[in-house]
Length: 418
Image (cartoon, rainbow, N blue to C red; front, side):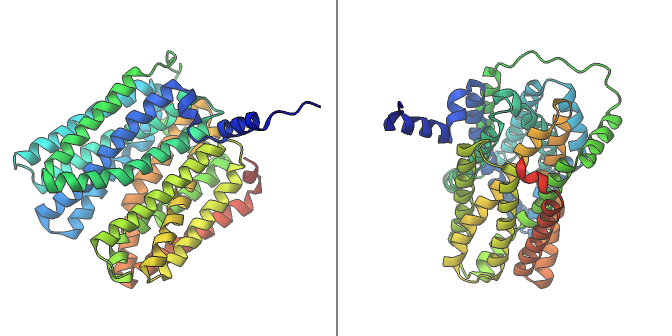
C-alpha cells in the first residue's frame, strides 16, 4: 500500500497546526488583523497616558481609577441597544464610523493636552465620549468576524484576534513609556490618533457581500428583550455567559490590584510591576496562539471548563504567594488561562449564535467583559482589598469563579462536546 512520504506529511501537519493559517488564507481578515493590532497598540498607549495624566492633574487615586470607570459606563448603559443596531445595519460601515469618531476623540485629547488646556473635567468627558463610541463599535466588530472568515475558521480567527490584543498589551505601554519620557504625554494621544488611521485604511480595503437589512423589524426595546430572552432560554449560551460574567467581575479584577500586590505582597517596585504585567501578556499570547493552531479540532466546551477552573486555581495560589520569583510564572500561566477563557467563550457564543441574534449576543458579551468588569469588578476588588487585603480580594474572587464554572459545567455536561 502506498504511503505518503514523511516530508509531505510533515508539511501537511505544519499547515494544519500553523497558528497563522487563517491570516494566510483570508485576505479580509489579514487586512483587518494588521490594522486592528496597530490600533490596539495606540489604544494601550492612550490608556497608560490617560491614567498618568489623571494622576498629574489630581494626585487622587480615586479619580485616576474613576477615569477608567467613566469610560466603561456607556458600555454598560448602551451595549444592548448597540447590539440591536449591529443586527439591523451594515456592521462594516458601523465599525468604520465608530473608529472615525474615536480618531476625533484622540485628536481632541491631544489638542487639549498639548495646549495645556486639559482639566480633569475634560478628561472625564472625553473618556465618557470614547466609551459611547466603544459601546457601538465592539459588538459590531465582534459580530463581523464571521463575515471575514466563515463559521469553520471562526475559532482560529478569534484566537488570533486575542493574540493581537496581547501583542499590543506588551508593546503599547512600553512605547508609551518611552514617548512620555522623551516627548511628553500629549504625543501618546497623537500616536493613538495615527493608529486609528491605520485601522480605518484597513476597514476601507475590506470587501464584504452587500448587506441586506432585515425586513419587518420591531421596536428597539422589543428587540433588546427578544435578545435577552434568547440568551436566557438557550442553556448552552446561558451557561457560557454565566461563566464569562463570573470571570469578568470576580476573576480579571486581579489585574487592577497588581500594583498593590507588587508593592505590598511581593516587595517590588515599578520595574517589578511592569515585569509582572509582561508575564501576563506573554502567557496570554501563548494561549491565543495555541488556540489559533488547534482551531476547531478541539472540544472547546471541555477546554473552556478546564481553562476556567485552572485560571481560578492559579489565582488562589497567587493570592497566597509572597515571593516575586513564584508570582512571575504563576502570572504567566494565569494570563494564558484568562485568554483561553475569553477566546473560547467568544468563539462558542459565536458558533452557537444564529445570524439574526449575533450582534445582540456579542453586545451582551461586551457588556460583561468590557463594562461590568471595570464598573462592578474593580469596585468589588477595591472594597475587599481595602477592608481585608488584596490577597482576600483575589482569592475570594477565584472561589466564586471556580464555583460558577463547576456549577455550570456539571449541570450541563453536554457543553463538553461543543
